Image (cartoon, rainbow, N blue to C red; front, top):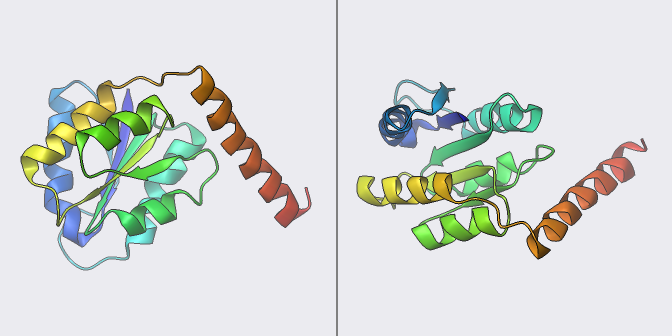
Length: 154
């Protein structure tokens, strides 16, 4: 599985550590920056990962900022991206099982290294349940397409 990962300046240390964890788990990691803790604008980095997920260049994405919230808002602007902010293993599990989330957004300020590892491991190992949830995820995609057509007149 290919995983795209990026952060803002507040998440650089956690991003680097998680990238190493992912590589040790035999995932192909696309680290899309930044690589230093100098101030950056999180939407630019969220867009890098979300675009790769949207186009299929990677299977899933991980985004990290101070709260995870700004990254999540930005990532969800891209077609086919279902980004979620998770702060524990339970929400990580359900985001995959029920929502087929393909981008997880994490808080560099609120998650310890141990908890971040647990959340990411749970998110990666949980499969989508399908069934009644598949109909709902499909409906999300339909609404996304309908709105794009309404806006762009295509």
